[in-house]
Image (tube, rainbow, N blue to C red; front, side):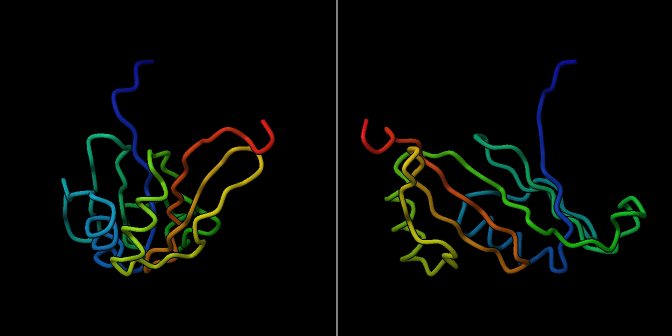
Length: 128
């Protein structure tokens, strides 16, 4: 197998609201749009596909499900600067910037459909 790209597909109630969130705050752009779905991309990330919950293009067993416990995580550089930029923009910060003892500096946003976007920068663990 040779994977040439990857994407995460999320069922949401309001495709436009999530698309606006990812394009306005996180630099994604719409590459495919049609009734009930949109594909978002940026050159340094997997694509994000947003599909309207209940859409017939979804398999029957998941057609009506909402994302629960789903977190889209991005490893980035200078997480503190991104946290500050997004906070200034009024992005919905769910978890403010913090550093974990194992060396993970992170913060989280929540989009209008409840999707958590986590931003991580790895740093030397405390005490090392």
